[in-house]
Amino acid sequence: MQAIVNLLKNRWLYLATLIVCVIVISVLAFTDPPKQASLGNDKYNHFLAFFVLAFLCSHGLLLKLRYKLVLLGCYGLLIEWVQSHLPHRTASILDFAADMAGALTYFALAWLITLLANWFKLRRTTDAP
Image (tube, rainbow, N blue to C red; front, side, top):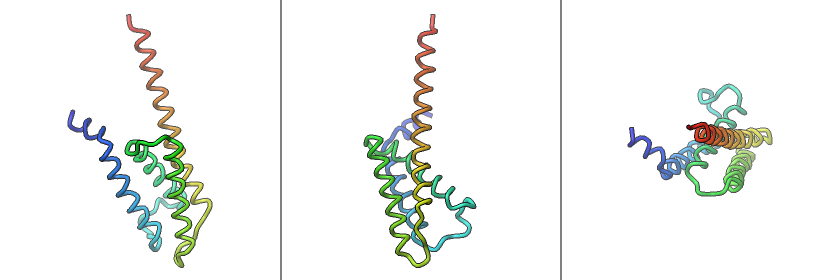
């Protein structure tokens, strides 16, 4: 069990997974839209992809939150810019909005969970006899 805990604390694991995810997302974004690799609505795909990317950035990159958001935003804009130049794809500002909504949702949830965990930890230490 301790080996799993140590593995999950390894920043390099998250960084390697982040790189793999960026490659996979880029391939999916720049090729013909696959019918089977969709959640049914393209915006859900964008939201989920950037939620996961935000999670991996959060654990894999030693950057301030604002720089992580800028990095994710630039990647989302890059995807839309490349798609605007591909004959089989189109760019959409709503796709970019879904990208940023996914990233912001992850960071908001992470902040809320951290806040609640700290509150419970503080409450537990002050309630101890």
